[in-house]
Length: 130
Image (cartoon, rainbow, N blue to C red; front, side, top):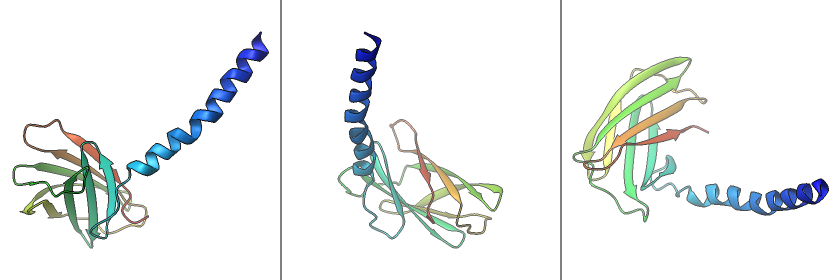
């Protein structure tokens, strides 16, 4: 009886594993601006890093730009063993941008906290230079 349970459980795991991995790959949106794009439901976020400037593009799940005029975006940059916090400001249409006191590091991580008006805050995690 124990052997049958193990065989059934193993079979189920083997059958479901491709579905779990496939879902993650499908949910990553294509880059439109040359940065790293991530799906953070209900948004597609794309982060572009140029020197010490971060630019965040916000769109819906159909890649239609969303107005970020009333959005609040706070960012934590982890680079060169330092932690840098900054706020991004509205730069037009679906664009939020800001400059920080950090130097680019290939292993850098960026955590974006986006609060759109009237919607629950979401968190996006980026490794923009990988």
